[in-house]
Length: 553
Image (cartoon, rainbow, N blue to C red; front, top):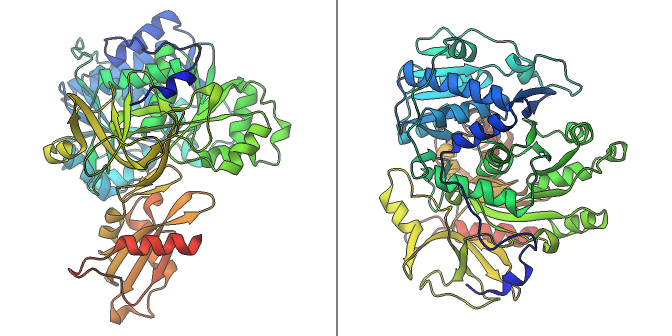
């Protein structure tokens, strides 16, 4: 890796960062001791102090250990939308010396079951509105469930419009092994002294990685601590800043930038579980929000609000994010209005950032430069030889935040993590190049993945569901360009003869919505009489993809 990027290194930052060699829960303990009454998180104008967060996490950890028999190193599913309970649950699992397995709240029963089977989880902390999806697993796959009701934490009325699913009253869950959140806390069970340290597993987000099979990325307290601290340092975040949490906590971007990092520093974070541009603007004005991390589609929508001039947004110091490139025209409009959107790059395998733009010299549609302790190269995908600036190749990453490997998948781990010159590098599967200043840019993907508003969709997984429909003879899922989402999911389908004329595009989309998470559902469907195939009979998805992009261009 060259050193050209060091010319643009943030002036305030050293080249390295000192990261505590401690357990992640210790960050919460420290913040609770320093500022016990300070609001750690605010949810629809209802605050939760650092001390209350610590105490409730301890009580829930005691319940996990003593009633749910959660032992050190056990995996526990966390299946909620952004909320106070999500944060409490996350830290409770850590306090129980267990491993957090965050699950996208869009996932349905089959997907939830797949994660539980793969990681061996028998306990889940989940939200009430998601319980109907988990209920079929009660007593079999999942032996214990603690069900949270968001409205339990709405003690005071809010100036914001509170969604119905947040306002919903607590329901009774009478199945064996299923208890309410309040019951779990009321049990008053204290946890055992914690044992884990920086080298023990802490969190295991799932990714499709370089194949369609979901894989758990094994992250230690140390690797999670690294990006939580590094991202805060990069942006000179001060404990006095109030931040806005818009990115989902189950995803590594929101988890680190809007939860673990702020808990480490002692920031107050205002939580919104669903994107609402008016609510976001009201929060900025009321709480003097200094910044937030979000995908470009949210930023675009926020600044497209015709009523934005009504709000005082002068407190905003930075806007950052990634997951998809910010369109150049939009980035320029933001710059013209005095706002810089700082883009970065990271993966589940690196538990968020490996590259971030220098805040004082950010380039649009750019991944940024390697942050503290990261070495990154662009190499020939076949030979792994490093390529000179300007040439397109696969992006490789070496750094302290690399995962330990994929859970129980040694072959996939060996394929993803390669040793070059005695250093372990992650093969990202992303094609890019480095410019003369040492900034990294993404061009395409080696891996077949669709990036819809920052959500990663693996086509083969969607195809697997499509083939379950009795009308589908063949299916190929590709990316289609979308002005708002960047990319969206398109299914090219050959129907069985007896179903032609009986099923239309809307009917197939409606069926998909019943069987897979909303972000995976094809937004576009094309019925064809045949799909292009190779001489060996394999469907040539790349030909369809190139044809689609050519048509949109």
